[in-house]
Image 1 (cartoon, one colour):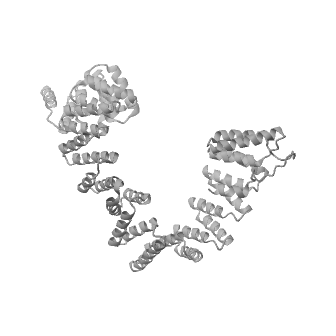
Image 2: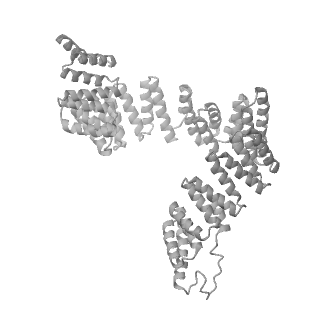
Length: 575
């Protein structure tokens, strides 16, 4: 860190302070009571710092300062501790006080600039760093900090000026020309970037940083060149990458960039071979893994898959991770055949990855309308001894529900609750199943358990309130629960429908219609909401509207709804 590197130059070391016995002017003379206390408080502070007890260290430093108020060194230690404790405002107050006494202390000027930067006061930070350079123009790192501040503020003129000032002061330092070249590349000034980078390269022809920046410049130049010129530039770019790798074969960044560059310029064979080589040699390289994930996130699936396929044969324990990532990528590409191939190769010894792969397989089979296959995969996984994964039972219960095998759905959820009795998702699902098989009291019991664990679970609150309303009981409590649910999810059409249904059950038909119409605006394809509207309009003696909603509900119903057809017939007979 910049500040740490400057401490030795711009602070007065306590260790180097000469203390002579009998000299009462020395800060830590033992025969002076206050300064003796200060010395021991300082030493206690060091001990607390070694134990990372920074607040205690700060308390001891404060005591040391109280007994030796003229020691700037102790005040510097106090500032450092305040910064460590992220008390930037307090640290800044201390620094400003010291700077009023010694306005040319570059250590405190730089430290305050650093704090202002953290406090997002960029203007004040820049002023302090400029002041530091004015006092001591040999502070090389400060030039680059200032240039970076200006670049982030899009003040490229000031950034250029400060870098030129650095170059004028340090003409033999390649860093100044390199940073200036980067700035010109960033702002699209090709000729200026070329001149700056040539000067940097002349000073230090072995710098990989310079070579990478020249590559970026060439890529910018290529983007503004004809197709014929682009081919020549491509050869130069590839040559620089190869030069970097010839001198440093372990430079993963250069290898990855070159492999991707080959792909972008149509050199598919070279790209594939290099990605494959990287995969074969680097299965345990975190940088490679991060690169693959970055490629995937940016939807660059081809190189990611090439590398994964190359990684897997030699990856040993890590192979499961790579199979899983490959499976996810193939799913993104809608290639479920290859996705399944990778998921199926993951052994159960890779517990978490194996379980996730089983869940992915189950979802794929479900999307393929292979419900029986889905259930079979989950049951097989459970039989293999991974039954502690509550998601297996939750998914199994859901798929049995969708297959209308409610008794088996109930068994699956109950089996899951044997190993995870407090699992809210399983409890909620059990309540839903009980509702579907007509066990209303059992449904309410399970949903109340959910509410006990999660008092703000809007869906559980809605379930209890709606079930009470449907049963025609506890309507006051039902409305209370539904209104609470609406404070949590105010735009949930199903919860609004529940409120409308409670009002209907209370005989408040006009108010019920208002809520049910709002619910329909949020959920316009639910037959139950439409049927509720029809029922409410019947009570309000608006039969034409009721018939219309009943007919819409029939169109949206998955199965033949005899009850609705009877309602329509009775109403039409009354006309």
